[in-house]
Amino acid sequence: MRGPAHVAVDWGTSSFRLWVMDAAGDVLGERRSDQGMTAAAKAGFAPVLQSHLDALGVAAEVPVVICGMAGARQGWVEAGYLDTPAHLSDVLGRAVVVGGQNRDIRILPGIAQRDAAAPDVMRGEETQLLGALGLDAAGDALVCMPGTHSKWVHVAGGTVERFATFMTGELFGAVARDTILSHAVAGAEEAVDQDAFRSAVADAFAAPARTANLLFRVRARQLLFGGSAAAARETISGTLIGAELAASLAGCAPGAVTLIASGRLQQLYQLAFDTLSTPVRSVDADEAVRRGLAIAAGAIWKR
Amino acid sequence: MRGPAHVAVDWGTSSFRLWVMDAAGDVLGERRSDQGMTAAAKAGFAPVLQSHLDALGVAAEVPVVICGMAGARQGWVEAGYLDTPAHLSDVLGRAVVVGGQNRDIRILPGIAQRDAAAPDVMRGEETQLLGALGLDAAGDALVCMPGTHSKWVHVAGGTVERFATFMTGELFGAVARDTILSHAVAGAEEAVDQDAFRSAVADAFAAPARTANLLFRVRARQLLFGGSAAAARETISGTLIGAELAASLAGCAPGAVTLIASGRLQQLYQLAFDTLSTPVRSVDADEAVRRGLAIAAGAIWKR
Image (cartoon, rainbow over all chains, first blue to last red; front, side):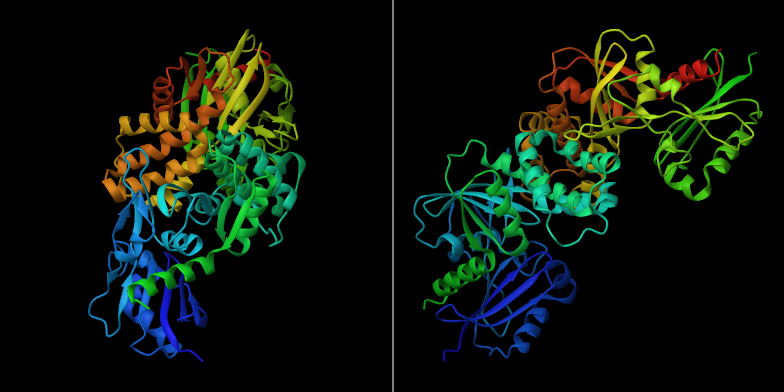
């Protein structure tokens, strides 16, 4: 049995995920918590990390590689940004050492698009891209990484050429929770109303400018015609995702989109792409980030 | 000196406005409060109204005409909807009497678009339209009524043919208050950053599908290039308004838009229309609703 080679951490704004990996890239142990950057900034990044390492009994000589918001200005140690166009291999060379620890801990940088007309930033997604496409990625890829802040990335021969972030997930939360539509979705079951979702995706894709109108119709439809809370929720979700796809697929050469996602988001976006007859190559997001962190660990500690 | 002929009330979701009017349509007294439908549903509609009538010493024989959410299902007495196409004069004939009061009180109905593909409702705006266009309106008008829920209405010869509601104002509030952009706008002064607003209107008008991306850029721009909270706020506002205008002006014959608005909203939308070189005929919203209620009072009580 092989022992732990490195610890991989995906440290987001609101979530913390840690895997103990062996040299072959297999997972020996795993921890998940809601101690993301926001919570860890109060509790302390070092104690949060150490508590999870202790829980899994990870020896002090096992190094840790981290991606995500732990490298933000408000994070643990600022890991800066690579500027576009950025080759994914450059992510490895710019890892920042966390000083004053009794263990080798590195945080990977993000990528910035310093274009005054289209400024954008990512942190964590560059590592998912590395894992999904690999270091020697050839050809062009249009990559969709859905989430609170969905990223759409154009990658050519392993270089991130340009990207755009859509606040789709966060808008969904704000609309469903903090507007008049909160009444429309109250009590919605977990089950997805596929018809409502697909129809909303198609409507928003056809007329994305009308998004704020399509959202109000959720309320008007319930008032005039009734309808379930689940249908209302899926219509909001489908509307916002349909508009995101309209903007992101416009002007793109037809071809498969690489979808990096897990769980419910993977299902929703897959359904949205199916509705639009857009072929998709699906990559599991958890696997992608683990693989990206393993590639980084391999390069940093020269195994 | 003429005495009060009727009392006009615009009873919205979150605001209450009352005017004591003489037969010539002049304002003899005015009251404003935040006792909109939501608050009044708890305190009681009759006591809220009576407290304001008492404060102005309005005699029991002076009748009251009301428009807005007081006529909703969750309001005082449900006043139903006219269905599109609806002539504005039909609003007068469908006023509902509030029973059991020691005063003649009527609530005007709203207008519904019972189109399964484009369901929509308005309450209060039909009265503004009546006041702004008059009973014998000739010709076609494209009317913009900005607000929490902006309405865009196509009126032909006094008939509301079709309309669309955009949740623009409510989305602005939710985005500025309940998303990551709340940090970007924190501490913004009241002053409007006109350049940021105009540039955001133009960007969103040109690419309305990208709204969720244009919004995230507010955050990315501050991270990478700095910038004021006021600029961030106006960019959010201009983005949402620009997208609304893109959807609403698309496919419309060129010509003046009738803008029914007051105060800051009037200024913002005027600036947005100016940015797009769209001519505007501006009507004060307060005046429009008072005039609409006066036309209704004149017809109901046959003066």
